[in-house]
Amino acid sequence: MNAHTKGTCYLLQFERPYRHARHYLGWTVDLAARLDEHLAGTGGRLLEVITAEGIGFSCVRTWPNTTLADERRLKNRHRPKLCPVCNPLGAKGVSRCQT
Image (cartoon, rainbow, N blue to C red; front, side, top):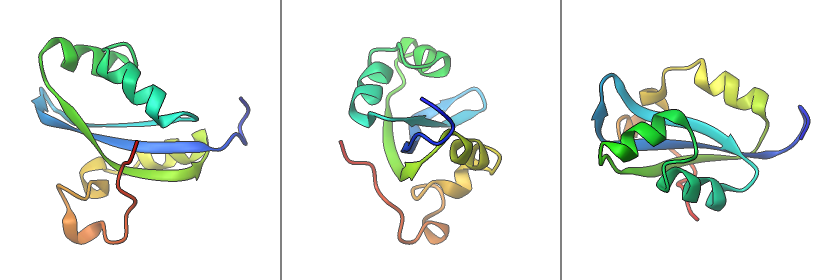
């Protein structure tokens, strides 16, 4: 992969907060495989921890055709504002997660 590789940014919402965390924002070239990794508790440290705690999650938003730089820009924003569940008025016309 290089800086111009296109993939999908995705936003996960936890069933309940884990300490301060309620969301996880990531990027991948294969969303279905990455979500399977997260479900198995192997896709990222935070997802490993919430899986071990028995906290479920759902994919609530995607941004297709994005790069790692796009992921960084999204992470620099406040995630609840990006979440169509937490902020339904601010998330009109968003792509819902489908795998």
